[in-house]
Length: 140
Image (tube, rainbow, N blue to C red; front, side, top):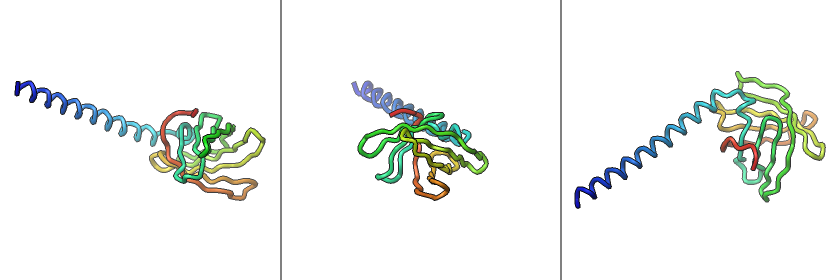
């Protein structure tokens, strides 16, 4: 009976070690995959604001979905104006459903897991916000 308990404990510990190892491998792989992406590809996904007041974004290859704190959403389109993979920067032109337009300069961190977005309207900086990458989802 004691042998069965010892065997059960050993099996449980082995399972925990295996699961932990798989999780760690996945995290390391994700980090290396993101850092090697072009800035245009790295922009795609779900981004959350580091400020509790700023909206979260779901970004596809040509659309942004803004999710406000109250849960309401707004769908917008964007076009890439310029990219620089050497400096990890991308500039996009955003158009809202109501027709408002802005230019957004986005500076990626080295690992492409965070960004600083600077919004300009008629060349005047209107806001700067920091975001963190969550996952590859492009819709809420």
